[in-house]
Image (cartoon, rainbow, N blue to C red; front, side):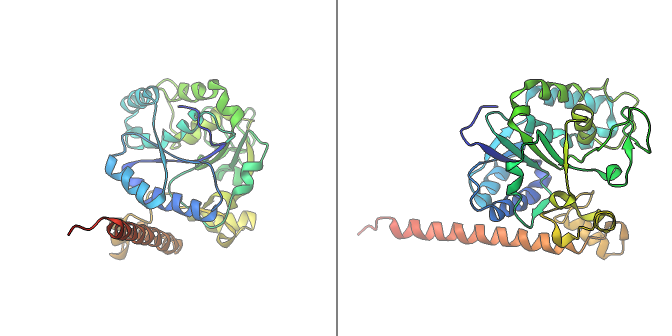
Length: 307
């Protein structure tokens, strides 16, 4: 990807079904960081033009970066060799954040987050890779280096394992192309042969960056379905969170899943924080509609009138 003059970047990966999430994530990031002077980058794989126009209209200036042909080729091969991963290949798009060049810092978040407060202090960290611990680390466990399964204290196990939904990447990592190449090498049928883990990009990132990560607390990526456990183990409440992460198979914008819950399917029961996300989403769309109406009104007022 081409180098850009902006020193920092906020980026997220977006598929067609995640456009509502991306819209809310980007808008809430901009509102919590009104003085942010970096780029906003959307990583995608054939995101339709109509969806890109919608994001642009609601969220302002956005730079779009399509995934590399090499990652696309590797995803096709992995999906063919591992059919169980075929519907989850979009989860690997975050790896493209390591192909962004010319930045001092790149902040990546999954597109199903809602910012409650500024995370601007992260841009001042000297760490190579900032992230937050994953579930195993939160519970005092390690992960087997080969299978990624949680273990107690096995020799050679991965320590301080981390989630993939939030990453602050230093420019020194971005400048070294070997990191991106190393990540791609793990997106292959060979690397996933005999693998039973349900993790995707998280497995790849932890294998490659083992020992080079710096963990920050869960406020920076507060996983909503784990709220009770996070509070019990760390003391952080959801109200303390800087970014709420709506992880899991059911997202706040999935109205059909909400209807199934209303019909009595408890497996789809939403968290009360979904209402907070819905309010932010509605407010973003309302502002975009009002801004568009004002723009049309100004254009009409300034247009020359004929006689």
